[in-house]
Length: 241
Image 1 (cartoon, rainbow, N blue to C red):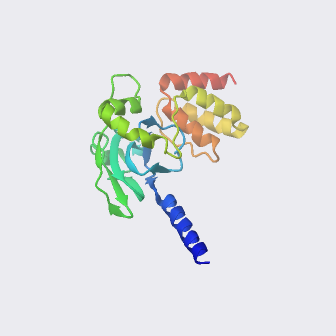
Image 2: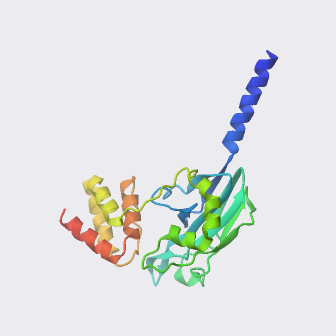
Image 3: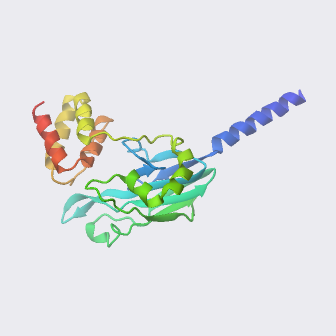
């Protein structure tokens, strides 16, 4: 039976190693993930800011995205995107903004020069971080901007880890198309709640939808992604339906 015990121990060791051979990342609720290892992130991490990466070199682009109070009303605040680089194995990481705030006057330059804190098991981790330089287009393609900022060599080093992201998926879907598909699936009460909120926030996002279930949070996400023309087109489509 000695050989059987050795086999069990060996299998247990292999399983334990496999379970730990990843990087588990948790994000603060005020942070939004934009890019994971060269790929734009769609609506996959929203509401569950946890994901798993392969060991080794990884690169994440995040920004602070939250509602703040301005002159008694709420408006959406989004910081400049931050590129985070780290090379680590078998770790549990927590990423948080270096500052928290509730009011516009408390931002004090954080929008243009944001900083995040990365901790491993509660201890600060030294990582490289820098702002993501904006491209020349009207709308931003964060993955393309990151590729240009990195250069081809760094991108190739990260390519092996791209497929290992467990929850993020690339999406080039139009906010209008995604919103229409979700709206069709919504219940009558959800349609009414979203329509009222969308009209109130058609020029700028001043309040949260605070919807329950899966449909309303996703509608809110894609509506925030839409520009003013896309919101107007979507609202016109809603009135026709």
